Image (cartoon, rainbow, N blue to C red; front, side, top):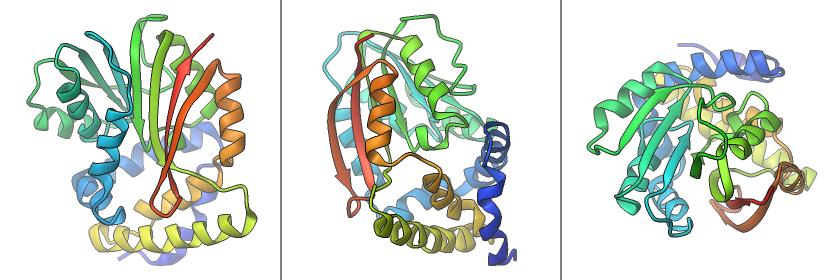
Length: 246
């Protein structure tokens, strides 16, 4: 069993876009086999409910083209198919293992999955109505590039909704949140994979993520307006809905 000393070195493995991309690919490949168990456990059983809130927060659109970023095993893509049965939905993930699992679980004819980087989706300019992501933008190797790509593919007026851990601007809250996630998520990494770094990574990725206010500013500077924000999980998780305005 790998010991906990390796957990302390995660931050250095994700301190540049290239290193973070490589870490994510390896990390999520290893996590894929028990990813759904882990997300349910770490969220105290609330993960599915949060994702339902995400899809319910989207505006009503007729026959939308939808892209789900960092689609994992397909949860949000399948919820989109239930909400928008006349849509076309593509789930994008960096790791082949996640894509394979999602494809095996897929009961919908209008949902497909492909292995791509969220900063290079391959969609045409202004060709997408809805973009979603659960635990996606925090894992982007370069957040600015990720937001630019979302802006590029969305039609003007198109919406995006993201569910992810949220970083407080208060230093004391940041420290407590970091160690809580480090220990709680590391515990599940140990139990499920004999490797605490598998999920303790969440704390380090959030440490490098902008505070909530700085995140909002970056979103607005990337051509979006914020439609709504809702916090879950003792204020540590946020559902953010945005719309492309330019």
